[in-house]
Image: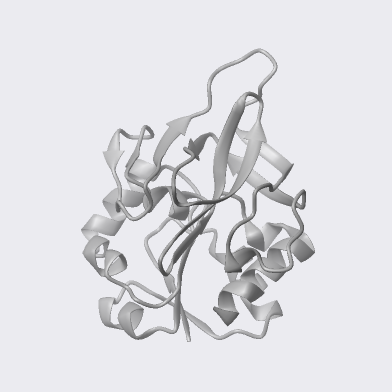
Length: 195
């Protein structure tokens, strides 16, 4: 069973639809015991990282998530919440990935948010098995995770090269939305389900 963390920040319908297409069973929960006993945990997210951390703290889930030993996948704000610190809300995060979350710089030729299709490079993770370098995935974000030892794939937007996939032990994160990334995203979610 897959547990989807219920913390008021999820892009839940799209994630649930993607899991349904893959034939996976899931439950939406904020119950610590259900999260600990799940085969896999998804931390999807759309919105503000500061609010995401506040909701996780209100539900007493920060330490629960940090101590999970099954595969965990953070999506978009879920990835950012697993980093050290975010400029969005100037908030300390879960401190799983050795990355900081920064805002894209303002530039005349750079639209923020970074929204639309972009490519993956430097792929280094079982999560990305059978995904060719240069594959396109779908992004919607104004903040990004810096490059770090946990970087498992990179993407360039303007002059910024950022971590589009992070991996540390059993924790994985995608800055893009695999549930909105067509066949490539579906393959990534299938890879997560087979970890």
